[in-house]
Image 1 (cartoon, rainbow, N blue to C red):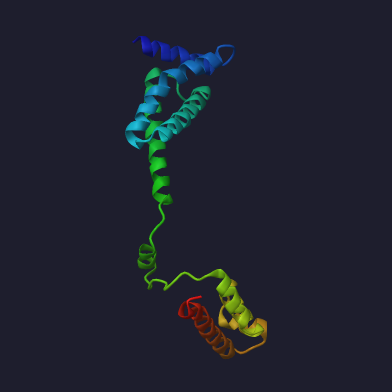
Image 2 (spheres, rainbow, N blue to C red):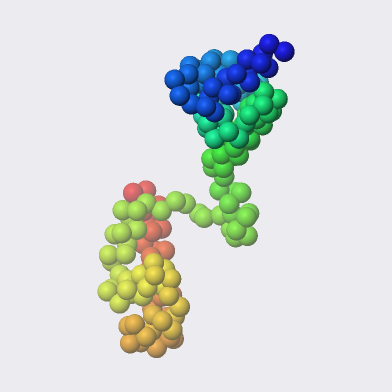
Length: 186
């Protein structure tokens, strides 16, 4: 019961503000930081993450106490525990998002076939430079600006059929050029 009365006094001191605000906040942090850290160690299994959890939860607790959203000691312990749970769930969700997917997973998700080899940017630029101006422009409008054949034809004063032929031939020339270094070992 003594801890509850003490928590109640700390909450009242934080809610009132004034001269005792900082000391009440420090006392609250000293009381709950070890518990939050242990929760973090148990659920995150990492000392650094547990320390980050302590900071995150204590900031939320202090803000809630200042805004008088937590007034009773029973609310305080539930609020701390709930904030710990939510913060751990967010950390785990961010960890799952941060894991890079393998090429196989991405290809399967896209429903296509795996790319053959990564393309060297310098080789690609050299190969693009070997194309004629009109072919480069058709590829740029088609793939960089993502325009349909009709829109490319309008911009370049060509027919749609001509755009499709130019694009087809330019892509074929790029493929030959990009495959050439692999065959020669360059």
